[in-house]
Each structure stands twice: as structure tokens, then as C-alpha cells.
Length: 254
Image (cartoon, rainbow, N blue to C red; front, side, top):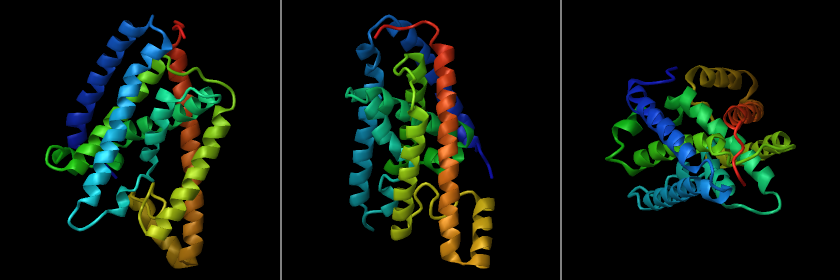
């Protein structure tokens, strides 16, 4: 199990450094601006993510071999197609709560990518970035999410409130149920809910399946993955709150 490949070291580390510099610059430039102005960079990122996804869906439909079910946006990272536009544009009655849940989800994708980038996108994707749209999409998409997460606490785009942890846990649980059912109906591995991309854990799943049967194993497997996802998002939410606290000493205008 390799967390970082040489290709990730050569590309992701410099990209993160550039994102940090841009985040610092944007914080200095926008620190005295109202929230609606500070939100503009995130709105731009959210729109780009949606356009990238439209391009991916069109490209998948145009494949000579037909549409790839794996391209249905049911992956955990695909939640960013909901989360970031929600933070950037939703101003309804429950805006603070929706944004809080979305911040936790974004923090989770951020942590997953910086801890285990090879699980998020492969060295092949990096090497074929300019030759293959799907490789271009996945690398660009996740790097933009990294940048978006940095902006959330740095520009104080959300103020944490009560109830966000409970709703985050409930949202992720519902997502895992939906994605888990879809994974098995379509026999497609969304969010590792059909099989595990981590080789040692996949071997364990197969071994258990041989011992107690496929159906009980898959039910148990989905429950375990769901619990792990919920726990990780809760931890990521508190990581976000820590970042918000550390970067939020100067209160920016609403």
C-alpha cells in the first residue's frame, strides 16, 4: 500500500505550495471585504467543478464502448458537486447548517487527498493528464477541492454552529446507503462500497466471504465502511473547526 507515488510527490506537493501562496494572497486582499465578495473565489471553483463534471459525463457518453457506469457521480468525492455549490450559493433558511455539513465533507476530501493521494487519483492519471480527459478531470477536480478547502477557514466563509456534526453524520449515513445499494445493483465500486481498493483489506473481505457467505459479508462490509466514513467525516469536521479557530482570530465582516 503506497500512499504517495513519485508522481504525486512531483506534482501534488508543488500544487499545494502554490495553493497556500494563493490563499495567503487572497486573505490579505479580501480580509476587509464583505462575505459576498470573499465568497467569489469559492463560487468560481464551484462553477468550474460543475463544468468539469458536465464534460466528464459528455465524454463518457461519447466513448466508443459506451457509457461507463463508474462515471455516475456516486463517489464520495462527487459529493463536492453538492457541497461546494451549497456553500458558495445557498442563502436560504438553513444556510449555516448546510454550509457546516458541506465544510465537513470538503475537509474529509482534503484530508483523504493529502494523506492518501494514490487512492484518490493514480500516477497514471498524472502521467496522462494532457492526453486523457478523465485523467485531466480527476486530477484537476481534486486539486480544486484542496484549494477550496483552504479558502473556507482562511476567508471565514462559514461560522461553525450547533448541530452540524449530527447532520453531517446523518447525511453521510444516507449517502452510504444510497451509494451502497447502487454499487451492488450496478456492480460498480462507488466509495469502496462494493469492494475495497486497499489490497490487504480486500483480501480480508474475500476471506470472510468464503467463510460466512457473500451476502452476509457484503452487508457487514457496507456497515463497516459506513461507520468508518461517518467517523472520518466527524473527525474532518473538527479538523475544519480547528483550522477555522486558528485562522479566525481576526473577525472579517459579514
